[in-house]
Image 1: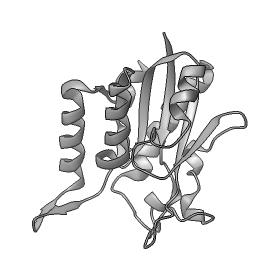
Image 2 (image 1 turned 135 degrees about the vertical axis):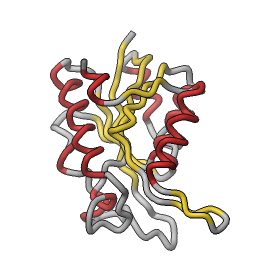
Image 3 (image 1 turned 90 degrees about the vertical axis):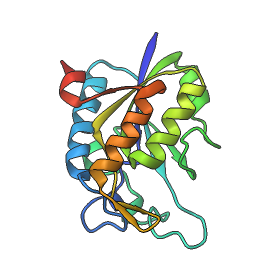
Amino acid sequence: MSKALIIVDIQNDYFENGAMELVGSLKASENAKQILSKFRSEKLPIVHIQHLSVAPGSTFFLPETEGQEIHENVKPLEGEKVIEKYYPNSFRDTGLLEYLKSQNVTELVFVGMMTQMCIDATVRAAKDLEFKCTVIGDACATRDLEVNGKQVKAADVQTAFLAGLSFFYADIKNTADYLS
């Protein structure tokens, strides 16, 4: 069984002064960096997912902007796979599945942003494609949301989505537990 790290959308627009700042993005990226270091030291496959927003009216991850660049904390090294995507699901219309198959990967570890969108969509798709999935919850970040006039704090969004994934789709761990 081969394992790969999938780093989803840890891009500049999600950080302070970015176009779509998330709550806790810096801390999540620092935790993701620790996971990335482990995969690099063990010479395991690493895939950096980079979202580009090309739809009319897009306000963040615009191509050829600083905001769409992968954050310095998890910047790809030469030779590490980078896959561009245009939808929340990192498998949709990308070469991700083919790449993972070419590496004989059967187990995926996820870090990244936003928990309720791209992490959720990608992890669910991965499980449906029969990958064993682990999400490092404190290496993911989200934002405050609103539904039907009710405000939902980022911490509650994070907890709810990780709890939902933990029911069937993924093992949920924190950085310290995963690294020990």
